[in-house]
Length: 206
Image (spheres, rainbow, N blue to C red):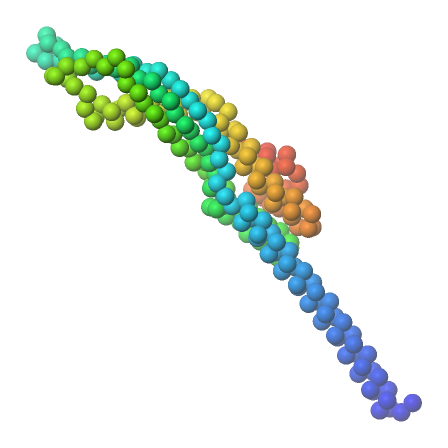
């Protein structure tokens, strides 16, 4: 075998090996980019408003009295209020911040937005008692509206409405956990590797 032929065969072998490694590297890169795009798409899919709805009712009595001439003369006004309110607790996951580390195949949830509570009360007035010297005014309606929302907020805090909303939040974020786990990626939150929905729930609920 001539030297020229040996050199030619050696060059062919080296060229084949380099081409093989290039194709292998290219496939790994393409696979990684595909995984990243899929994860980003899943985050977009859960990036919606997670809403829990509730309905509350209450009966209130509003009273006000104005005194004149060293309290010798007084004018009162009062009304019975029946309140029906629709309440929503929502998480806007479009505001969630996260980081995707392709090299280490890790997605880290950096922050989750706080819940948004919206109260839409329907207030009906009954048994209105007022005088021309002390009539109902816009200030009264503002006070009533403020008092109604304050009372409703207390009811919401004592109810399971916010807990139900948080459970729905965890259910949405678990979709990311399922996807990352199935693809060999790691989901991190609050400095911890998340391996189960139960752990995710504990971390979020604190």
